[in-house]
Length: 341
Picture: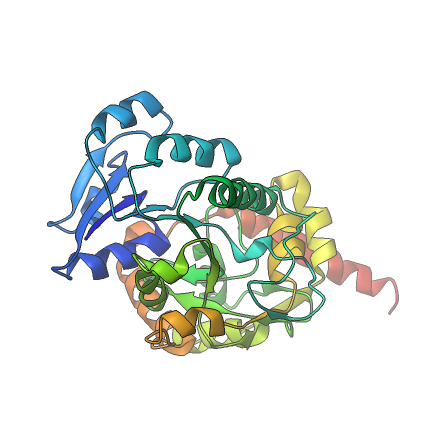
C-alpha cells in the first residue's frame, strides 16, 4: 500500500512514519520542505515542496495515486480546501489530523467521546480545526470524498516534555527551573484531569485506521488510557529528574490576564484546553483497532524524553523572558499576600 504524509516530521507524525517504514507492506512518501531530513528514514520517499505553492505540488504529484493521504499541517479551512482540490480522485482515504481541543470547554460530561459537542470560544486554533472538519465532512456527505478525522490530545515524543504552563520557546525552561529548585507554575490547583500520549502509542491507533474502510466518514480520538492530574504529571517529571517539586498554583484566569501582554496565549492553551478535566473514551477506536493500548505510561515516557533532552544540547532551549515572567508573577502574588497578613 502507498501512503503520503503531508508534513511527516513532527512530534506525532514521526512516530507513525518510523513504524510504517519498517513495514514492507507500505510504501511511504512525505511531502514537506525538507527542513528535518535527518528525521526521515532512509527508505521513505521525499517530495520536496511547499504546500502553499499549490501548482508546484500539483505538478510533483501528477500521475500519482495513494491508498491514503494524511494531513498533519492543515490548520485552516483554506488549507484543507487546497488539499481537496489536489487529492480528489488521487487517494482512497484522506486523514485529517484535527485536535481534541475542538471539544466543548467545558463539556457537559468530563468523559469525552467522538460525539461530544465541538465548540471552543477560547481558542482560534480549535475553531479553525472545527471549521476544517465541517468542510471535509460536507464533501464526504455530498460527494463521497473519503475523509477520516483524527483528534489527538496532548501527544509527546523523546524530544518533548508535556507541560501545562510554558513560554513561547517550549518546555525546557520549566525543566531548568525544577533543576534549580525554583517555583514552577501549575495552572489551577493542579487537580484537573489530563491525558498525555507517547507518539509510539498514538502511531498504533493511527496506522490501524489507515486503509480501513470502517474509518471512512468517521471521526476518532486517539489517546492513552492513562489519566493523571496535573499535580501528578509535574511530580512525575520532578521524580524523573531526581529533584523536589516546588509547585506554585495560580488560577488559569489570572495566568491568562497577566500573560496576554507578553504574548502568552493562556486563554487558548489553558482555559480553552488544559485547564479542563477530560477523560477520553477510546472504545470507538478500539472496536476497529484492537491493538490500541497504552504501552508507554507517562512515568516511562517522561524518562525516555528527559534522557534524550538532557543528552542533546540542541533540545535545551532556554527562555529568559518566560523565566523572568514567572518570577515576576510569583513575586507579585507573594507581595499581595502581605497586604492581608
